[in-house]
Image (cartoon, rainbow, N blue to C red; front, top):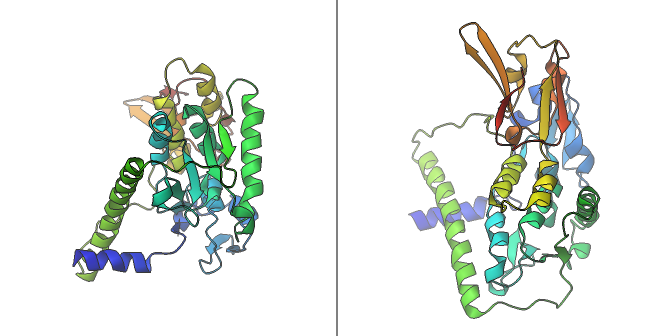
Length: 335
C-alpha cells in the first residue's frame, strides 16, 4: 500500500515542485502594497496580475525557480529544501569538490548534487555557501544555454557580481563554473554514500507526501497548517544557520552575511501601538505588555526587509535598514 502511494505521489507531483501560496504574497497582506518582483522576473509569463492579485499559471511555468529566489516573503516555495547544502559545503574537505547541477543534467552516479534549477540559488544563498566553503565549489551550467531556462545564467552572473561588489577583497570568491569535461568522478564508495544519503532524504519526503495522500483518501482529518507562519523566511533562516556554522575567527565572512540581514529602529513618534506587530508577516516585530509597561522588540534573523511594517505605521515611526550590526539572532528592544 505504502509503495503504491509513493509511486502515485511521484506520478502526480508537479514537475517543477513549485508551490504558490497567495496568502503569503505581500499584496494580499496589505492592500496598498504594489510588489512586482516576481512579475518582472518571470520571463515565461507564468505570473500575471488580476485585480491586484498575483495569478500563477503552472502550465506556463518552466521551473526556473527565479520567483522562489526573489520573493521576499516565501509566497513561492519549492518542495526540495536546499538547507542540506550548508552541510554539504561544510563537508567538502572529506570528498571531491562540491558540484551543484540542475536535476536535468545531474545524476547520483556522478556525484553531482542535483537541485531543481540553478535559478534557485539566490544571491544570499550563494554568499552563504561561499562563506562556508573550505575550498572552491562548482556550478554546472554547461547545459543552461540550451535550456528553456537559459535566462537564469544572466541572473546568476548578476548575483555573483553583486557578491563580489559587496565583499570587496575581504572574502575569497570560491564559486566557479564547471568547465565541460573538467570533473573527476567520485570513487565507488563516495558514490554509494551520496546515493544512500539522497535516497534517504527523498524517501522521507515522499513518505510524508504519501501519508498525507493516504489520510486524504481515507477521509481522515488532517491538521491544517496556518496560512502564514511567523517564523521568518527561508533566506533569513538559511543565512542564520550559515552564521552559526562559521568558525569564530571568520570575521570578514560574518560581516558579509550580516549585510543580508536588516535592522529596525523607531523614532520618538512611536506610541507602542500593536499595528506593526500584527502586520509583520515574519514575526520579526513583537510587542510585549507587562502591566502598564509596553515594549517593542525586533529580531533581525526573522526580518525579510519587506517594509510592510513601515508602510502600515500610521505614525511614520518605524524604519527598516539593510545590514545587521549585532548577532541577527539576538532579540533587542527598539521601543
